[in-house]
Image (cartoon, rainbow, N blue to C red; front, side, top):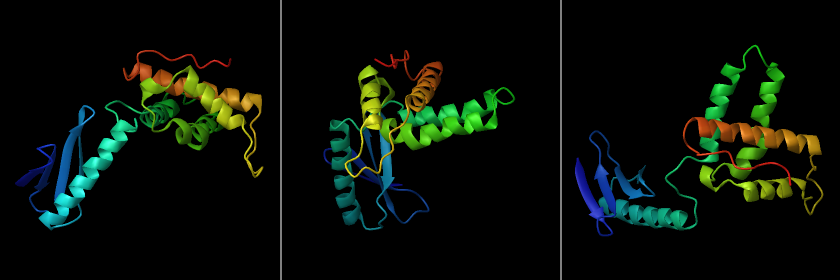
Length: 176
């Protein structure tokens, strides 16, 4: 395997056996990140890798890149477990409604957030965003019971994260 480094050894560029394209990798936020440069030219691969690394550093600075699980990871784990654990105890529609709330509302808002960054303040921001009318008037404001169901689903996903050791405790998500 051919290897090169750039940016003082912070980025490694390599070509795997049986692959014409160069790959690049870097260790950031406690884990190794890698991607394909999608080119067989070493000079183009070095340019791509430098841009990719600088973009990753920007994400790290903005808090979008972290070494921990995200809400989306916990939501996927919850979905994988919930249907199996509630089989026979919950109506099929009840389970589908939980998944719908996760995919339509919770993941778009919390999906990329690190689990440790979700707290009472971020949950309050979520409530405000759901209850704020859009300027063009096309957004439907949910009822209080709908928002309550979404909060219950959020709490269930966070409990899943606690069970798997991704979060130390469920933050206070109760309504103010």
